[in-house]
Image (cartoon, rainbow, N blue to C red; front, top):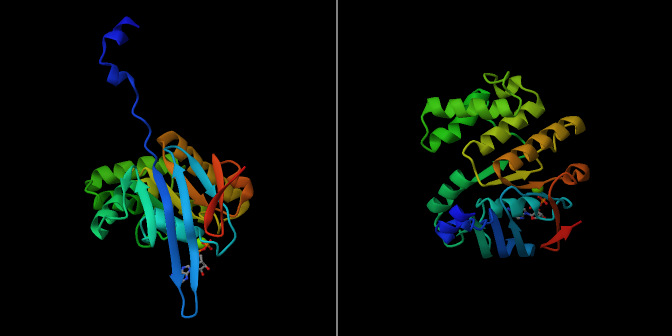
Length: 242
Ligand code: ADP
Ligand code: MG
């Protein structure tokens, strides 16, 4: 106690947690020939490090749009997107790409792995693009793949892996650069229920051990119940679910 009292008091106060993702008053409409579709009307959400959020809503309600806006793949018409405290709406495309590369991991329903590369190479590539040597990138790729239970599949190409294994490689790739935010768009939509459960558990464990924030769009209520929070989209607005 006495030692602590002699320290600089500012060092005793922990850094306040910065949300991994904040959306404020986000609006986005698509213009058709005939009409305007207001997909996101006034979106507000805050996701803290280590928190997992299930996004459960019917098809066509704007889940993918919301994930694309959160992942800086699409610009909203209005509102602010903050990644790790950085306001992104006024940034140019190059700065947004940089944040996407260092802070955000994306997982799609289809794995989108490069077919001619092995599991290790698929996970190493984004790290090499971020400046790591091939040796270091492959070393880290092997560690992540090992953690995800793919230690015996390192040199397999996507076509030589099962659907669940492919999706776990896609997860490894998405987290290879230690992002603060993971966005997944129906990542188990193509998998059978048992495999979906395994892939989901992997995702949730990963989020918790690495303080990764995750927003996962899913139709699977049972899997959603394992996450920290559940939200839905209703008329372009986010509504928290129990
Ligand atoms: P979800 O992922 O929940 O199924 P989406 O975000 O893909 O929903 O789409 C929301 C709505 O916006 C849908 O009605 C869809 O048809 C429409 N939409 C999505 N992308 C575009 C686009 N690029 N141009 C026009 N309409 C779009
Ligand atoms: Mg979708």
